[in-house]
Image 1 (cartoon, rainbow, N blue to C red):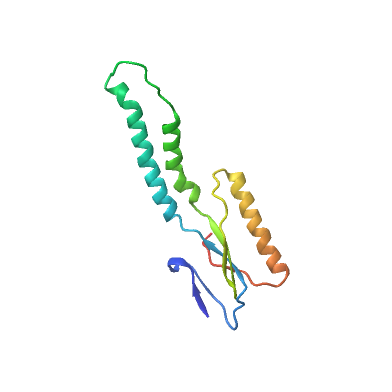
Image 2: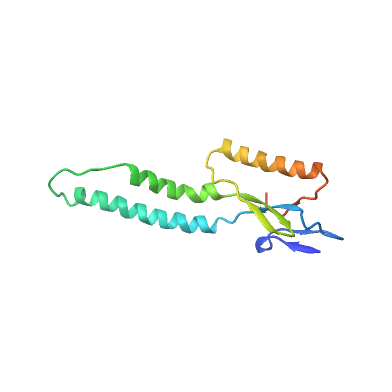
Length: 138
């Protein structure tokens, strides 16, 4: 049986019967997070302009200036980088297809912890002789 991963980047070929409960590791495509990041950047730019407009127009009175819109703008710009390289664990069973999406983390220590957790799950599956198909890209 020939099984293609998303967009045909890599494919895994297995001969004979396929274990329906075999877990697999698949890449999480970041397109949804890219769209969210785009909207977030546009909204944060709008907030930044609205906050700075009274100062630029030299209106009289007190004006509150905050660094939060700029910080959120930077967060929106970094969101696609945080989504890069994420993988999900998928188990297909007779009852349905179950997916575990890891949390979205930014720092390397947390990314390593998520990768270690997924590796432990894969090792546990191999220890009980359950075939694991890694259809993700490395």
